[in-house]
Length: 380
Image (cartoon, rainbow, N blue to C red):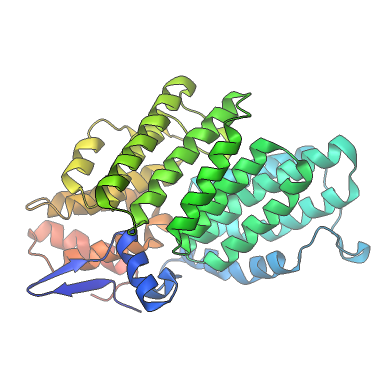
């Protein structure tokens, strides 16, 4: 597995920031995943189940079109049942139950496509929305988080096909949001920011519902995240733009409150979580820890994955502060306890665990770190 360490003179530092990984990948003309080694070989049954389900999901994504021959269509399923199954798939994603989600997606997507093909008028549009909701985020972000960026791109492309028929500006902006995620994962922050900006600009003329405002807030957050990876911009300009997007998102969150619009988690809590993650990605580790003091991730009770991401990013920043290594390990263990499959699949977490293994630690912290190192599949 490729190392994600960088050696400089006398100190070895972790390459756990997406911007650095992206920069190295650009210089070498390779995908970021080739540096991080994703997807990682799983070491526990739950994680194994997710990767074992990928071949079937890959065939589904490659084989499904909007016009399947009649003799290959699965039995029709009532729209109400499909809606419940789509909601359940997104619940599994946010709970980071990747194995159960991946195993059920091929049948769900096939059933949705069959329903779309058989329906007309408003019923067809309802099923097209359900199809987009199944691809976003249950399929796209699952595949991105597991390291299958190419399959995530196919998923957002399939969703875009359905959304194009809807001719719905809000769903079109939603498609732009998920395309931004995939473009970042592929190591193209400039294109990602352009896609998010275009989606936000288009959406601003159609802010006719609370869900539309929540999506606009998410687009500001993903724009800020894209900027952390764009090392071609001047540092001061980039930081100012990031602060601007965060301020816009915070203002919108103050009006919307906590939401579940489009199976996402926009609201004041997610803005706070992004303040930690963005400062971590920028290398502003003291600011990240300070920002984390006021965040209560448990408010996102239905999104353990987001809670785990907060504790993981906090742990990554704590690891860079002198004398806070034990606190960093405690935070990483909290993240793992909340959503083990998400944490075990995280390249930045693996990098910071490797780094901490080379640091002098108290005996109890070293013992805990050895356990985490084993569980995420790194050599001891």
